[in-house]
Length: 322
Length: 287
Image (cartoon, rainbow over all chains, first blue to last red; front, side, top):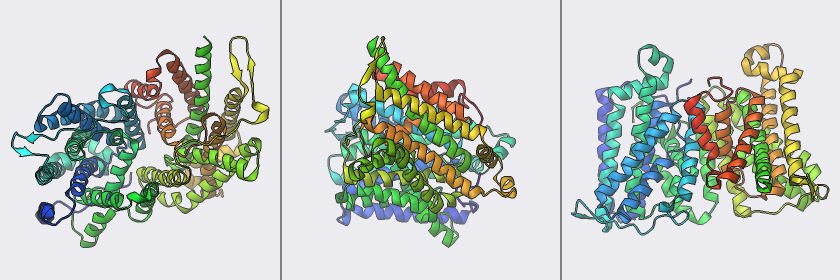
């Protein structure tokens, strides 16, 4: 198997320092958004997708596993959080816990099934599993089918922060995103992450070194699915609804596209990719179906000429790890 | 009992499409090492080409059965020459991503011009009506689809497993470099193989046009079911793809009769069960 990314640069203190500087810059920029007059709803939405793409990237960029069903975690967590908030009347923090727990359980079950096959089969299996869930949610009464769960109360986080105020909600979403991002960064640079990278590069060798690679891949899958669920739960507060769009295969495709545009296996790539794709959808909304055509075109161009993605190209040019 | 037989027939028809599509996927995967995500979109193109031929050119169903697969096959070969061939040597995942992009483009363009609703395509005069088999009423067109698909599947199996051309093809799948050394133009064979696989998808599209109407997204959900079929059957054997395709169609039909709520999901559930029991798929070679 040829390497998916050309990130062969060793993890050095300098690389870590560079990455922390970029992270600090990103956090500062994002924290300044409410003062710039940029529509916060757009940025919040992009942040949720950025977290989703980062979780997805943990699996493909570091584990070499292309999941074509990550929408199932986004949608499942979204539906469960929405149901907990609206029907059970739980406070926001518990609503998030319910959604993340649901995604955690789902990723254990789906991971157990899909990890049994490698490469291309893994992608087809995750896609088929998410389609299975799509049909279940289409028929299940609690999701309200085509209508989705609407008008979800935002409530007060920890009884203090009023999430119906856009600025408060923005900072809550931002903190959630940054926490998830740091967790993923920590995972990538942990001994576990190093083993994962070695499996991506050469699974046979990792096995011969005594690593039980299936367990590592399974754990990566569960971590990725659970974090994707966290993104789904956050998104419920932003969009105030949970619908079938979030479990549809086209959503899984969008996540792949975001990560591909930003750079597979780069740390900041998925964030950049998410902002690019969400902005594109925002500005091209009036073109209807042409948006799909353009997305398809970006896929084709990226795969043929631009496999490193935006951040991957910059990192390659600067010979830095980003 | 009438309803049971009717659902069985529907199952056999869906099975024909699964068989034709998974057969094409398996042939393409064997030569190109690519899972052709665009397969569903090309199936849809087959139906649309038949629709255009009839409504713009006055060319009837029978000619469409021949011409539509050729046109879509040529389109596929252009795709292979201009894009897919550049992926040789890269990770398999890029092939999936590229063909997914192609599928989005093709489906998006058709959706833009034809919306999401279906266009009618009339059953040809010679296949209208039905016959009474004693135990059930068989619409002639539906019977025709099943038998014709079966013949095409078996012909493809014969071509690949029993002819000299097929032997070259199988040899090139195993070891392209060696086959090239014998003076056989492997890149051209790869292009033709892609054309063949895509042509089979387009043929399925023409067959389904009078039954399912012609819709831009008719292949989008179908391809995911076909992926599950491929996971269940494995892509190692041509006959395996054919049998699994038909069998799963029939099981789906039976589910529609006995427990309709699960008819959309039964193939996926079976995939899960097969993965739990025999992770390599039924015709089992490790990937």
